[in-house]
Length: 309
Image (tube, rainbow, N blue to C red; front, top):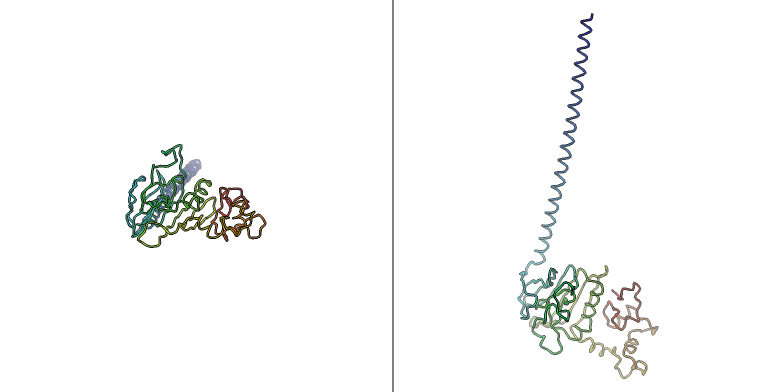
């Protein structure tokens, strides 16, 4: 009886030990399985990241290739004054690390300039002349020898543009210095830069390098702005429209002030406040900045120094 009892105890002990061993093995197996799953998941995550980066880089490359398709990318010194342009060329006209791209057509005319971001000139860190220029002079594009035409930048020095022929067109002097071109540049400077910049330059024919008109589209402070204007003297145009205050038929009070004379032609209801619609109807392009004489008669509700942006 005692012998049988000892056998029974030994049997139960053996079963207990085997059972514990199986539980430990199962626990170890589960841990190994969990570890393998974590490792696999981490590996898959790394693969996904690499794949996404590769796709992103590939897309970026394809986008740039598509952008430059049909054009030869050419490197031209920013201070090249020759005035010569090659046909069907794309040139980076941004000073320093800026990427501003200029495109020519089959006639060698500068027809388009684009920039994802306009970065203002920094005269504290960049080499500029005492007059705020990167270079002492601008490219001598055919046409700039005319007395009434400037060597006009598509993207000004102050906005980070260079001075070679791929950024210069013969532009009416008044337009360049005091007209819509100057207002556009001033608006971008005051905003601290711009994004999604595009300039489209139009010509009357393929025989000249003197544009007939410009169209600029850009975004500042979240607002998309389009400026379109002819390559003409704006003062002469305003005079022909009777907006300069020089018309003899004007009243004596209007003649006493040029701005008052112009205001009477713009402020059609005579309430002393010029609306955006009234300004546009009078031929003024938006935005009107605080440097423009009309600004003080308009309502700048967000007080950013511009109306109609």
